[in-house]
Image 1 (cartoon, rainbow, N blue to C red):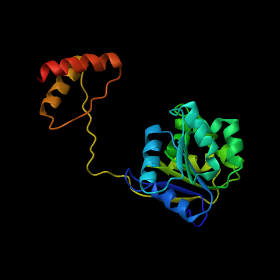
Image 2 (cartoon, rainbow, N blue to C red):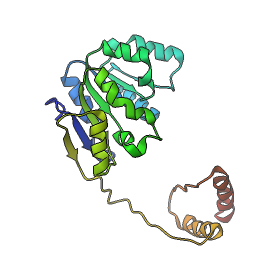
Image 3 (spheres, rainbow, N blue to C red):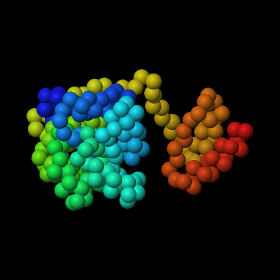
Length: 227
């Protein structure tokens, strides 16, 4: 779809090969692939993997870099094949002017569900990506996500200003994952039930708490109860 020059929204499960959907077309087409991503660690991981495979024309631009590192990436923009960038970094007028001088052949939006109406408070700069795409000359656009409702998918297409959108929607069902809910009366009962579950747990596990204070108190109690 991307190689045919069509704006595409793809929903694929985690581990389903979303990166390949832009990395391979990037090699087959002239120009720069611009990948907007909200996850700094994922950006760095993708860049390192590309470099390990021999593709040295990859870099990430985000708030984790030092001034010198940012300057180095900025000066190498015209030589890059893959540029990973945070939506916030794209708001820089200087950066946009530099990108407008490049041939951006593919505009990729990762975690594209952040664009949707419900996601504005989370990463508001995602909602401005449609305008940025226009400033870059409306390059072919690929929006990727692993989670989206039908309404969210439409939001993504509308807010990015996609034309004749090709939707490639695959099941994100993960048969090895189950969701089970128990309703308990109060904090004491929750703590007691959690202790039971932790004692039965084989291997590592995660416990999410609503506050840091509760997390620390619970951790102390679990250490005591499950020695």
